[in-house]
Every structure is written in C-alpha cells, then in structure tokens.
Length: 370
Image (cartoon, rainbow, N blue to C red; front, side, top):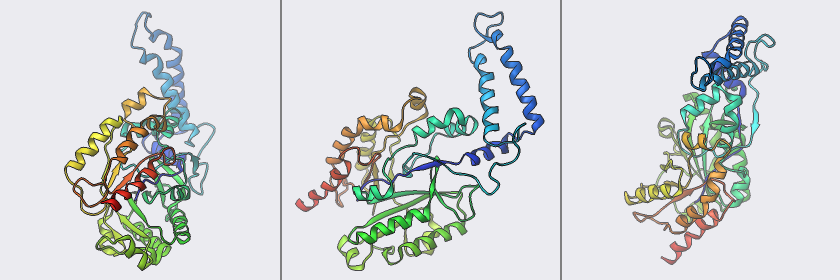
C-alpha cells in the first residue's frame, strides 16, 4: 500500500477577510483616518532614510508602504470602506480555485506564515500557494497511478454552509468531502479487487454533530465496502468478503461509537528540508521498532519559514523534485513485512514525477522471495 493523496485546493478569500476584520474592525471614518495617516507617513518618508538628518533603519522607509498594503488588502477583501460596504456575497463565502495539493502532509504549518497570509494576503498568498502545491494529479488519476493510501484532512469552514465539509491544507478545496468520497467509491466499484486505506484526520472546526454527519456519509457511500475494525485482514480475506476500504478516523469518540472506523494511523513525519536529514530521521524511527498495525513512513520534504523567506520565488515542487532520486533510492532499499525494521505504507509528494509508485509496488517482490 502506497503513497499519498493530495488534492486541488482553494483559498477562501472572504473567510480571510472575516478573520482579519474581527481583529481590525474599522468603520468608514476609521478607514479615512487610517488612509490619511498613511499619506502623511509616505510624504514624510524621505526624511526616514539613511543619509537624512535623522537617519533611521531602512525598515522605516518601507513601513508606510506595508501599512498601505494592509489597508488596501482590507478594502479589496470586502471590508467596509469608502466605496464598498458589507459582504460582497451575502448568500455565503465564494470559493476561488487555486492549484494545490496534498491534504495530507501531517505537519503544523508555520503559524507566522499563516498570520502573514491573513494580514498581508496580496503579498503573502502567492508565496503560500506555491508552497502548498504538493500534487498535480486529481484523486482518480492518483488511484489509476497506483495510490492506495489516501490521507484526508477534513475541515468545516467557519463561514461555510452548515453541512459542507472541505479538505484543507492551509487552503480549502472547492471539492466537498462527500463528492470526493463518492468519486473514490465509483473507482472502487470499477476495480473490485483493489483495496484502499483512507485516513481521515485533522477535523478543523468539526463538532460532534458534524462528526456524526461525516460518519453517516461514509457509511452511506461505501456501505459493505467498509472493513469493520478488528484484526488486520489479509488481502485474500478482503476479497472474499467484498471489502475494499479500511478507514482510519482520528477522533477517538467517533471510533468508539462506530465499528466501521479504525483508530488513527501513525505517520512518521520528519519535518526536514534536506533529504539526507529526512532519511536519517526515518532510519532512526526504524531503529526504535515499528508500531503495531498500519503506519506511514513519509518521504515528504517540508519547508520551514527560514527556507521560504530565502526562496520566495521557489515552490515545494522545485525544492522536492531534485531530491526524488535520493529518496527513491531509500524506498527501494526498504523491506516490507512484519519485522522490527520493516516499513508498511510509504507516502510521498508529486506522484507521477518519478518512479516512486512502481518502486513501492516492487517491494512486494521481496515478500514473495522471502
């Protein structure tokens, strides 16, 4: 079982505005006064550069322009301003598509980067988007390519419809979770001898009622395809029962109420920029012994704020692709099975860009030989 599920994502512009506006509530008069203040700062700006009578750090010369960016961003995002009042979409927040990614790198994104995206979206969003794209294939294409582990980060947007659940990885998807699960179910119906592992996690903004709604959707969509929780079955056993889905759910209360749900699957996430450091982390985890049951070894490189600031024109793809041969070599050296140092599920970014899927599939030959 292999790989990772990443997805086309979106940024909810109106939701960002609402989040900012709660902390920076400004009336029309406040906007006018703020704009006047910025104009004064910009007019006086020449006296605030090195070489002037009162030299100060260069930051002082650009600070007024940064404040102006904040003001313009607030206005353009739909806040009350001299030429726009009230939300532009009273029926609900619009979703604007952006190409993106993997719902499924289980890491905590830089809090500072998220804050900057909220305060200075016109400056930060292009950077955030480039570093959020971790996959170029859609769900069906990934399944066709050999992906059998789908890591689903699920969220309920604060400004979204009551029952609409989306995927999230810094950015929200246009696709609803229910529609995507239906697409997966349709693919499985056309491939009755294939089995997938679905890992539902994160659950940003989810209440107990929403968990129950999601579980009901899962049961309705997959029905008898779901393998009930218990001893890990063999592939032959799943075939004989007509079961094709093992669904892990990272909410203990929901798992305790529903026999169709399995506990969350441990994920070895290295949080490393350099592939050498990531491999060292994975080898260290292997030396500690494998977890019981399913677990994931992630060969996902992870940007940090320092790296992003040093590569503002870069992207996660540009950081990852040159390292794939090194990471694939590590994959080919692994041994599947129940041994202490054996691997189980392996997840990676940019499926289809290299030989990752075929390398993992070929690991099964070691089981046949052994």
